[in-house]
Length: 361
Image (cartoon, rainbow, N blue to C red; front, side):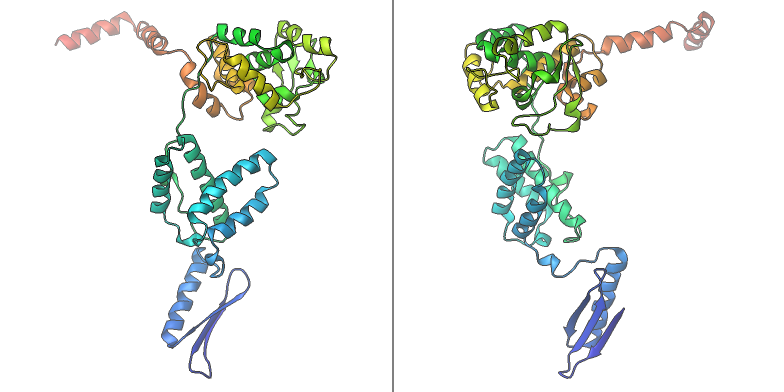
């Protein structure tokens, strides 16, 4: 419901009730200006593009604070990563109103970040975070539309991971102390992540059936995703190798410190760096996580299909597996040629002869 009324001071007061159930008003010198304003506001309400005038004045920094409060229910590591991105966003746009940010400014900022020498993957992650934050502002009715889109996005900066050779994997295994050897076995032959390796318990392994089922990641936190709980079938030969640590130390976990106690990923990585330096040909930044790439390459080389590799790596979607490891699948050019040739060779001889006669004519 809308109305306009002249006040004792000669001003015209236009008012209407918004979708939020509250009354909104504005004063004008002329009645026509008030009528025009009411028409425009009611048109926004009907079109679904109406915005609370007060909400439109929210700054980027204010909204980021609100957004982080809601995001804090995520895992601590995830929240810490978000705070790093938000700090960058606030440094650039913090004092600005959300409604004032333009797509051209977002795109120019991406160029600035890359010019700083930041990794393409990090710049891409900041853009994705900005998109997430502003999309939530749209969903919350704080702004009408987002200035962030695929058009403003920088390159993803994906690089093919270094895949260690089998000789390098065994060299790493040999270079590590006995209590850390399961790190290589679990990473290269079961595809576990370092936080999962540090937390993997003896009870998480079915030693008779040869099945590893990760339940937690260090320090006793839920796994990265529900898919990460997918059981991993492993050969009994691997179970035999993995059992050596708990058999020797009587430990509840498969990776232990010098005194047979569970250790943090940081402690494992310290020993890892020492061992890595002794292996010829490994990149300086080769991580424990990169053993997963060896695991993937091993499965692909043995002819396993995309869905099986996805399941073993515990990826949420086959797209993730293909995006990361698609280049490792063998070239199928000759296979496709053979498939087409096989069908062509089934063409009846009479039809082939008629086709040849027509071409000669």
